[in-house]
Length: 289
Image (cartoon, rainbow, N blue to C red):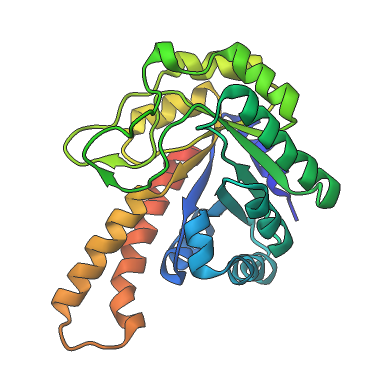
């Protein structure tokens, strides 16, 4: 079966992107898998440290691996935002397909040092697992926010340069790079998220040898997605949009079915709504819609 590395390289060559969607329950996993199978496009499922703790990394790894093997379908699992080497080790042992080491809030040299430690560990134990590094702080919370996260770099003058990106990739040996390009984690409640700096994406793509990943995709316009992918983003992360829709649809389901106590029946409308959203995003990212 095709590997995650091959999937991302194929997207990079065709100027499309692989969709990455976070989960913390089976309802979201079901929705993502069904949407991807319908469109016959590869997909990445992400779980953050908090989501991994809630679901158990071993359990979620077995779930995703089981779907991939049973249906012979390219669905992959990513350990989103590992902030320590211990967190990386847990995900590696569980059998994840990729790891993100998040040192974006650290000073540049320290970020390089700690990211390289993660890369060295993975290469020495499970070299088939991809390691992604982050450059430029964009916040940490996939939630609805009143304002831009404190310390997040969104102004062009504050973003990591192409030169810094090149140095970071060469010194760490990462397989993927997630640079700050005006994006933020989460969505603003009463305003649009900041616009992406497409020029920055283009310059970083030309400077580095590895595929680029766009974090914080929730709240961006279709046009911004298209431009970001055209300029070099090969993977796009979506989380807050799914969380927001999950809650809205569950509240609606509970209100419309006050006497229902079977959880799976209450979750059916949630799965349906999430599947539609994921399908819309996958069509856009893959160039199918």
